[in-house]
Length: 124
Image (cartoon, rainbow, N blue to C red; front, side, top):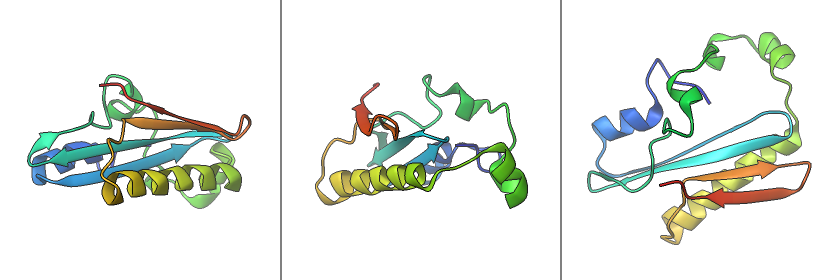
C-alpha cells in the first residue's frame, strides 16, 4: 500500500470527514493484509493506516504503483489471483462485520495463501 499523492488516505479522512470507514488491502505473492480505519463523530476508533506498525506507509521506499506502467508492475511485483482474491474477500468480510453488523473491527487482518490462514490483530 502506498501513499496517494503524498498523503496517507487515513490522514485525508481525518482532515475532511467526521464519519468514515476506510478499508485498505494489499498483497505480495502469497500473503497480504487488510487495514481498517474508522472515524466516528470526529473521533478515531482505530489506528490510522500509517501507524507505528506500518512505517512503510508513512515513509515508502518505493514509488507509487499508480506511477508505473502495467508491464513494469508485472515484472517487479508478481501477483497470484488467489492472493488477490483472499485479500479482497477479507476486505468484504471487514465491510460486512463493521458496517452491516456494527462489530469492533480490530485494526488489521493478515492472510497467507500457503497456510490457508487469516488472523485479525488489534494493535491499539
